[in-house]
Image (cartoon, rainbow, N blue to C red; front, side, top):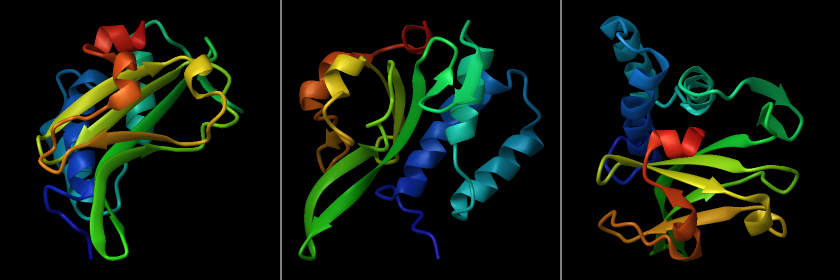
Length: 164
């Protein structure tokens, strides 16, 4: 059973699909989009590959999915969705978790989807900012308002800023 409310990570995946699909497939066939939406709503879809595909298609980046990088410039695409985190059964915080970064060697090009506000956020994070950690936590307030803290300085406002 999937959690398909605005506070679930599924809702964040839906926000990502809405943002990424037109970038990956301009002039797209609505039936394919609806099928992908169906998969996500039922917990069997994910936008990770779509994110990499859209970045390669809508920028000058070339895919190179080898160890520790996704693109020929040495950067890596990371996708995360917001979810409510609990500690001892009580709400702790709302967060998006960017994991498995400890062996990455270049820029992290990150997209974060939040279902409460139905928005996506872009981050371009240099290696120097994450070299000593294995997980980045992007925080939000309970109402979905961003509370990026130290990661806020790496937020980029546009797709072009993320992909160039």
